[in-house]
Image (cartoon, rainbow, N blue to C red; front, top):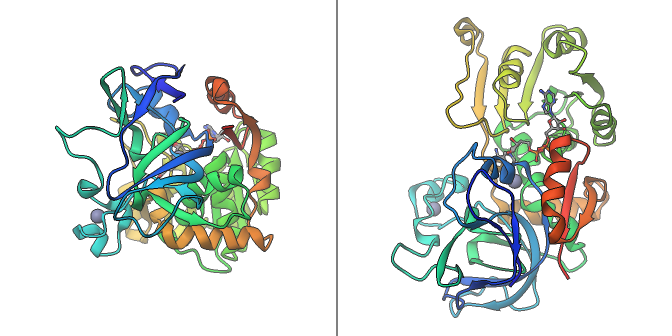
Length: 361
Ligand SMILES: NC(=O)c1ccc[n+]([C@@H]2O[C@H](COP(=O)([O-])OP(=O)(O)OC[C@H]3O[C@@H](n4cnc5c(N)ncnc54)[C@H](O)[C@@H]3O)[C@@H](O)[C@H]2O)c1
Ligand SMILES: [Zn+2]
Ligand SMILES: [Zn+2]
């Protein structure tokens, strides 16, 4: 099958047509990929800022139609529409059993060492990236890496539930539990940040302050519910947030993955506030904070994939979209064939897109 291969990192993707998947295991699902979103996390691995085994097929935010299911699978059947999620859960480890599904050890959901791997090319094992490997015509995944969605949800938009929407909304609703009436700042208005903004709007936040250094991103942010915008290219974001709020925000979300903006998120909190790190800060980078701020009960927390419980969350988000209360159409800036995946990443680095979506035949 055709797939976008990362042969080594740092590196660009190469389109090849000879990646093979193994036979479907008892608890696995084979999916015909319909669409796969282009997320900045893939780029961090391609650039070597995070490590993954190579060769690998990247991509992790996808939707598709079930082709075949393993003998023990009852949750889905051929023809069902599904969204994949890298937060595959085993359901039996300590993390899963205590409700922290995103922290699952994943030991029971992967094919073990020494066993035939899910993906191969010319007899060589291909690492399944984040348990998904979405930039491929088919995905062979554990059944607990999929959520079923209705056939009325367009598959190109459904793909975005796989990461950007679940991460952004989850950071607000599940990680931070933002209350109605509170004040929120969001630094970085890409595919993930825009979803933090619409999550804050859905939660009833009173002031939602979007920070980016590109004016077209700030325009988009208003469409997703931002009540105020700050152009970080010509303003001190911390001071600007304090000017708007008086003494800072209740919640600040960092959705870029940088040390300075993470420190800004913490600095723009009011006493008692919570800063949530959503962006992937490069390996080896440390964050420095003024220790005295902890005396004011300021908190800094991480959020992995929006602390999701995606089998519950994704159908809820699909319902909100159907009711016209969740924006997905506006998130898709471009639909591209797999051959243009490197261009899509270059476009993301320039910052002009909300989300590019790779669509398959
Ligand atoms: N925590 C998780 O589970 C999780 C899940 C998905 C993505 N992520 C991470 O979230 C981050 C955002 O992902 P994305 O796909 O939305 O990326 P993106 O590239 O689409 O968006 C980044 C945005 O930040 C803006 N920006 C960049 N530098 C800036 C600066 N110095 N000041 C202000 N704005 C700046 C850009 O203009 C852009 O709008 C990435 O680090 C990604 O890896 C984390
Ligand atoms: Zn588990
Ligand atoms: Zn992602």
